[in-house]
View (tube, rainbow, N blue to C red):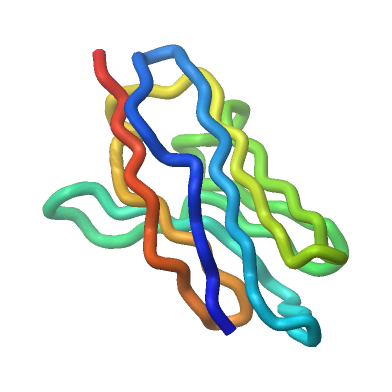
Length: 110
């Protein structure tokens, strides 16, 4: 299984980005999917997760600004990020069923 994250980039504070994560493997049906991020010099932290019944969870720092969603039939997952802040700057990683993508860099300028 391989995960490919995309959609990162440079955006001004207050702006939006949409991250995508695509998983290879037709028979891959993970129960839990999520997004993590790692800022320079910091540990990797959970941002949002979604489980097979649609239940979602978010880090307090992103609640109300970020939305996780998925297209299970296509093994796709998204992270809509609105009202971005400079402190959201990090490499964002997607994970599904214990597998990890390579990360996509999000930079928010003030």
